[in-house]
Image 1 (cartoon, rainbow, N blue to C red):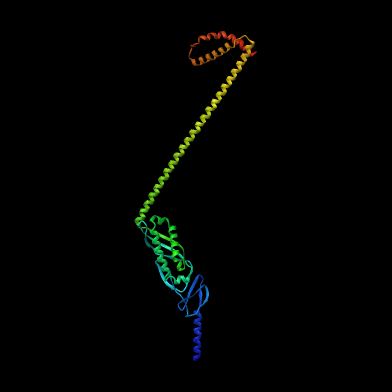
Image 2: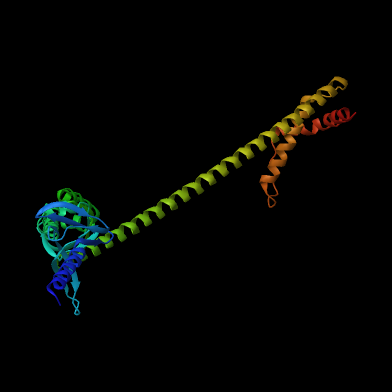
Length: 331
């Protein structure tokens, strides 16, 4: 082979290498930061991009890769990559001991969901982005938990998550990172604290049960008393109505008797005008007869002696007048 052919072949290979190195294919949801002679030039987005080999080079970024060994042990590795992942990423941090406001040491591990919104800031504003996010999360978590007591930590996870997200989002904004969510996975107090909390929980449940039982007894007693009160009121109301009706009946009966007596007196008076009989003797005789009937009833069936008043002797003399007067009334 001649030197000319060898030189042409070398140029051809060099051209192929230049073309291969100059064509960059970036996948969706990724970007590539390009530097020209060590200075930022452009950011390559998804699709086919052309750069100048040797002069233009992609800037590497440290990325955190989490894995798991066959025995279940979690492994975290940090690798250099020439592409920036723009998708939402989750970091699962190991457990760490934090001290609460009431001086209880507890273990907490957190999850953070974040997304790179500016690849240039993520590359140039921070040296090791994953490590910075991890350390910032740990220190912020210690500060937030240190302001709360253990009971508040166990019952206020949403509040803690919101505080962490707000603080981390403000701190990582200059790195081109958006923190979307922060979640506390586990809060593990010491064993003796757990036992004390369980005893407290059982005592609280017993107290609530006693309170509910007492409230039920109280309610039952109140309802029973109200029932008796209602029954007494209804009975009294019934007796009242019965007495009113009885009184009205007696009044009507007396009124009817009075009207009957008045009618009898009117008839007697009318008869007197046409007869010589004395109406006074008639009335006296009627009263005597009624009194004698009452005396005989009160004497009983076993009594054989009847006491009559002295004035009753005039009753016989009035019988003739009564007969005459009755005949006059009938006429």
